[in-house]
Amino acid sequence: MSLGTSRQFPAARMRRMRKDDFSRRMMRESTLTAADLIWPVFVLEGSGRREAVPSMPGVERLSLDLLIEEAREAFELGIPALALFPVVDVELKSELAEEAYSASGLVQRSVRELKAALPELGVITDVALDPYTSHGQDGILDEAGYVHNDRTVETLLKQALSHAEAGADVVAPSDMMDGRIGAIRGVLEQEHLHNTRIMAYSAKYASSYYGPFRDAVGSAGNLGKADKTTYQMDPANGDEALHEVAMDIAEGADMVMVKPGMPYLDVVRRVKEELKVPTFAYQVSGEYAMHMAAFEQGWLDADKVMLESLMCFKRAGADGVLTYFAKRAARLLVR
Image (cartoon, rainbow, N blue to C red; front, side):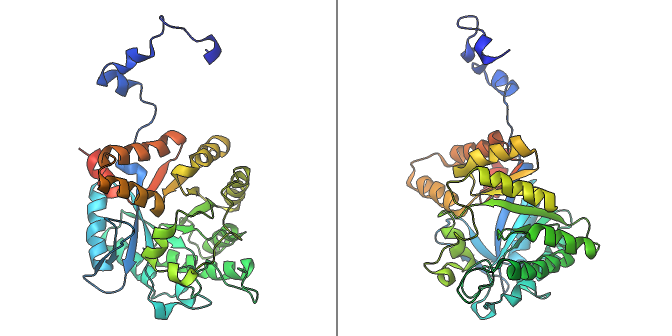
């Protein structure tokens, strides 16, 4: 029955099914569980270290020993995976980001220890150079200061391979260089790392919502007043996102990411409906910070709005959500 020929009032009373909790639950179109959540975490060097991120209330940078403890709780709550982001010491940053692919680097060591402690917890690693570059860009600069695509891909290959060899379950290129998915898939196949999954940040926009994240990983100061508009997508574009996703899937991505999240739910819907691939979205740091600011002022009901915001991703078609609310939401969902 089309909407044009649907029943009319009073034969149809739409409120009838809304009257009781049981019937509301029976007709619910989307569901949200802890299994839909991926927890982004920030790891730093040392032991017993816990640093608050001022622009992200409730979020902390953790040394690996404390992160493993927190990760164990997340796993017990039913969260299937975490996404690992490093806080790289200033002295290890360079023009060419060599530390990104060091076998003894912070991410590589963290992956090995996380997998040893919690082998069933999925570990997703960020494949991008901005935490490692002295200029804060996601790639290698040419003489004019432009991010050189193919030279950057060469370094991303090394980084992704080092993560996979350390035991990462999923490598997640978030750099937006052209051709990097095919190149990474090729080297993983060549090295017989057939089951290392690729989560491609295929529709990553040059958004202003990333500020608190850059504070958290320590790249904001390096980037300064520069931006990433020459490689991340224009927020005005939707069709372009479908081309990006289609290309990454053709090159060997297993799943794709739309970033940011709630301001781009139209893109999530189009990707899922038109391409029908595993689709994820990132409720980014700016989204989290705005919610937290309103919660702390008492302007919004924290638990209800948090869960509503996450349900919106599921309704739009996302298979899962990266969110800093993951543990807080999971505690509510398992009640």
